[in-house]
Amino acid sequence: MALIDNHGRKVNYLRLAVTDRCNLRCFYCMPEEGIDYVKRSDLLSYEEMIRLVKCLVDLGIQKLRITGGEPFLRKEMMEFLASVSTLGLKEINITTNGTLTLPHIPALKSMGIHSINLSLDTLDRDRFFAITRRQNFDKVMETFHALMEAEIRTKINMVVMNGKNTEDIIAMAELAREFPVDVRYIEEMPFNGTGRSGGPEWNHLHILERLKSAYPQIKRQSSKPGATAVTFAVDGFKGNLGIIAAYSRTFCGSCNRLRITPQGMIRTCLYDEGIFNIRDMMRQGASDQQLKDAVVEAVSRRAKDGFEAEERRLNLASESMSTIGG
Ligand code: SAM
Ligand code: SF4
Image 1 (cartoon, protein in one colour):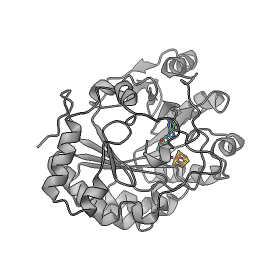
Image 2 (cartoon, rainbow, N blue to C red):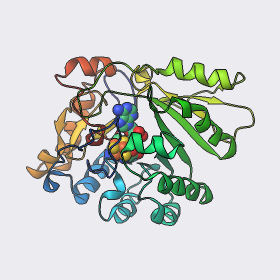
Image 3 (spheres, rainbow, N blue to C red):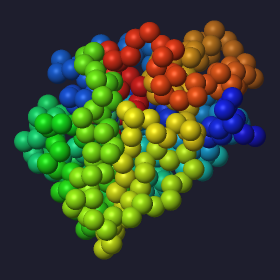
Image 4 (cartoon, protein in one colour):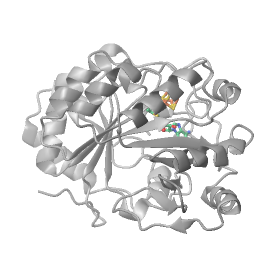
């Protein structure tokens, strides 16, 4: 079975945010004092998440990304991953800040986790502290090297921010020369939990200009279906470079994603406000068929792109990405 939206796009990729809690306070994601976390009992339980993933696999979801908040803050995360890995998904991917991941790397490898996205915005310890407001740089670098050693497919996500880390763009690219890692530059979005907004000065064109000035021979690669990154190869590099126009939203035409927030809101676009709460349906006794019908209905009314989704909602910039999952 395939889940097809009202614009003919196949939806086969679920981003499941397993918690809204985080041990870092990234400048672009939440305010220094953190955010008001939802009550523990309002988070989806593991049993509820497993039930939802099973229903969604029946509907045609093939790939899963576990995100958050910081997924490894959630207790018994590895047991949950082990259960989820038996549900018939083709890929399970995880996005993590890399501060709590290290002890789990051997188990992630043996479980066959397809890839890890590691958030790392700078290779400078002081700038790391300025951006994340925590002293975890060494731990994240240790995680990075352990992932390389374990030969787990890894992508680095770097949010590019004017005045914060643009001097790291090329140093970060150089990691892809030395290691088989894809380095992806992300436009900053206004999901910072503070209401601070405005388009990023470092948009995808500006980032590409910077890369081209260092690597004039950079070559654009063909994109995989549903990819958000425009990918580039540089001769002699083991990994690729990618640019994600997350604010400019140039990739919506082939978007294959469905999102579930930590408290069970279904979002058919990162920029929508949440279409309905599937946790509430489950807790009110809905059958699997009713849950599936509600998802099919939401997908059949999907905004054509992130601009339309944003227009349909009332309030955008006060949300933290930690409550959506990116
Ligand atoms: N805590 C984990 C981490 O940081 O990798 C997973 C959740 S985090 C919300 C998911 C992704 O969203 C990360 O790669 C992060 O860099 C990105 N992100 C968060 N806030 C963002 C923003 N305002 N603009 C662009 N990307 C953002
Ligand atoms: Fe935490 Fe990830 Fe948000 Fe940073 S981007 S505060 S690591 S959830």
